[in-house]
Length: 206
Image 1 (cartoon, rainbow, N blue to C red):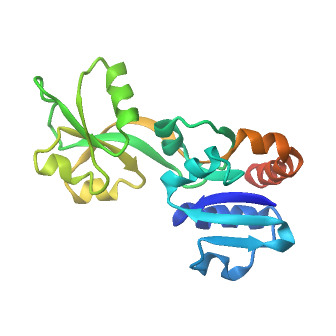
Image 2 (image 1 turned 45 degrees about the horizontal axis):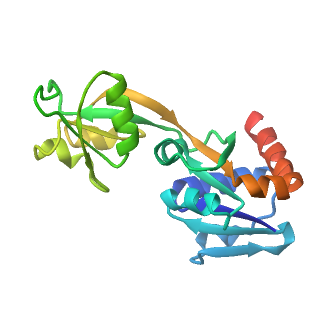
């Protein structure tokens, strides 16, 4: 049985559609289930539904053979997994944003983000020494209350930034969801995994 960890929400729905187009018989009620672990015996598959940041952990530790994770998570976490395929779903970008016409504080510039590793690397490459302030939610609030000069966050349509009076300054990376695999699983279940990759590749190409 192949065990696949998938994040709930938009990525889950788009990934389900991909798998169905690839010929996998997943029941219609699958997306509405409140179960966190769902077996599909006819396809010899098990799905684990998890938070996006946890998917990579499950795959790295081998409790899931495969996972679907955003490139943002993979860049931030740097885990021991292989990236097999760009699924071209849930497209967005990691961006630097802040209040319009504002500049970085010369003395102690501060950047709020839930991506501290990515943000640190980016500003270091720009020759800027900044203080990273880790936040988990409502990142857009940080510049408004004077907590930070800039934020680094995921941007999809830009609507949330606009509604909060913020503007996007730079794009750090374009983000899509990727199919990842545990290295040991890839050796042990290579035929099944390669078949899955081939079927998904054909769907993406079409």
